[in-house]
Length: 139
Image (cartoon, rainbow, N blue to C red; front, side):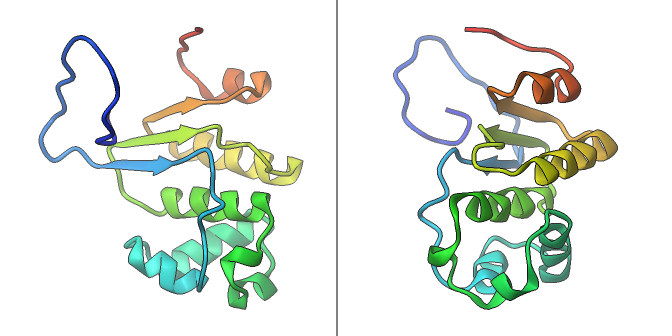
């Protein structure tokens, strides 16, 4: 609902005017085409975006390849890097660590602990949840 999707519900959701949300969906397999053109379309700074990708162990060789050729983990890194480069009031990440290697998980955790964004996330990795979350809801 926060993202504008029609979801069966009861009750009312109030959202502050001007609230900006950065969203990382669970799936990234829709990514196709040129990486930097896509990033520009997302409104992120190219240099910052590529720097974050490098910090997530993304090889420079991948910068010139079609995103449709990326592995699921590489596509997820693209979405996470773009989100981290967006200035938002709220970051909503749906299972951000799916397909992410251990080194990149550590880097993502380090970045989140350093910058402390307001983050609402769903994640099955218990250690990540315990290290990042300040509160939780279990269903």
